[in-house]
Picture (cartoon, rainbow, N blue to C red):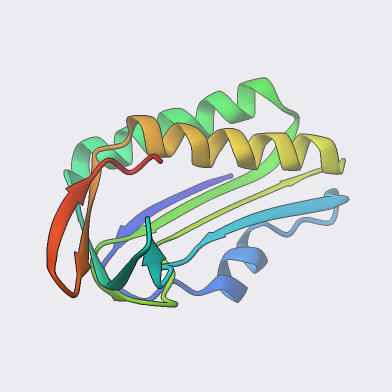
Length: 138
């Protein structure tokens, strides 16, 4: 099972975890990205996310399929939010389930790292003294 979504709505952590739970899974790993209050010593007021949705969904599906080929996973979920997000809000949730924790940990890290490198989702950081569009990866 693969669940991929881009939405302007608030992401639901409990729902995402429930969607990847499976009786055959001994481990569920979840990455929750949050909007932090500071970047490079500057106070962040908010983030704004935009996506080329069709291409982003296709790339997210490729990442999920790659993870399923590389690790013995049961379920993969990738949800990303677009729009204006305030400090503390959640722009991304990655969740995977597997029989064993190592596969879940490794796959989850692979998914978020690859998403930040390849998926056409852009982030604008808004500060007290201006704003800047930044690459999604550090």
